Image (cartoon, rainbow, N blue to C red; front, side, top):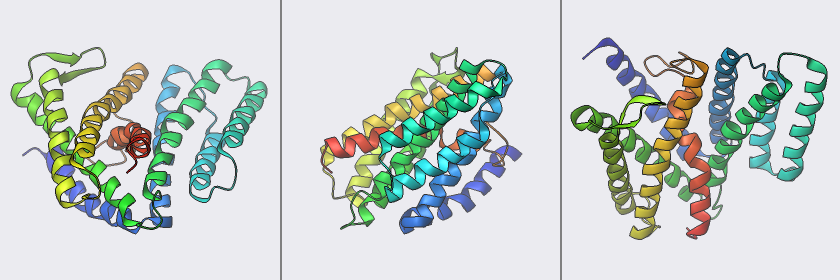
Length: 270
């Protein structure tokens, strides 16, 4: 076992129980947990898009992240008004900045806010969606994360053992169709097992649908983050997590899948 793999395992042994405990607690601990992921991931994104000569608005971007996430939890202002206000303020400030391309600066600032922060706010909605049976939201998020991990692991080891056909070489040269299929299949298997033992309040059919959606879109989320990094010419979003890269690297699939799962929960009437 190489040193990097050992570090990854040790970090996972410490981090996984802590994450699961916070998910179980919900409420403010979970809100702060999501906020930490969102703000660090946002700043990692802002950091590496500077390689493209883009100057995002860091202060307003971070303030917007906090307001969006706390508004999702407390509901103190209409979401449409909030988002319009953020776009208005960013545009107004850009008028006076005169730093490189105003279009790129504004676009980069907004992509970070919408893609990372707004997507992650769906996790708060999922955790809080049933106030009567409060544990249901936590169990759903736990199942989402376990299924994403299963997908990632199956895709990685399936790609190593059987990978012959490149999935998306322009974006991620090491990923293969074979690995992707492994990830998809094991996502469904994981969700079926979880439906039996953890989230028995959903049906088997709902579990298969959710597993298939995670198996597809979790991998797409990973590819999109790879696209961002490749365009910026960086390998990792940061080196904050030893052996794992940055927060955006570790939570890219969860970020992308969260709003989709929130929509599916509503459509399937879970």
